[in-house]
Image (spheres, rainbow, N blue to C red):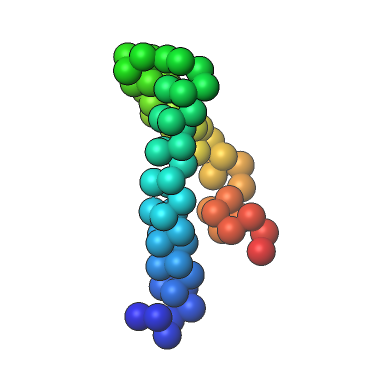
Length: 78
C-alpha cells in the first residue's frame, strides 16, 4: 500500500489530519473556557457553528466543480 504514490499521500494526509485535528479541538476548548470564560453551552454552540459552516461549504462544492474540472479543484493545479 505504501508503495503506491497516491495511497501513500492519502495515508500521510489522513494521519496528519487525525493528529492535528485532535490537538486543535482540545486547544479550542481550553481557549474558550480559560481565556473567553464561556460555559459548556457556549462551547457547544461554537462547535455547532463550525459544523454548520462545513455544511454550507459542502453545498457550494458542486457549483465549484461545475465551473472547473474536478482535478484542479482537488489538486489546486499541482
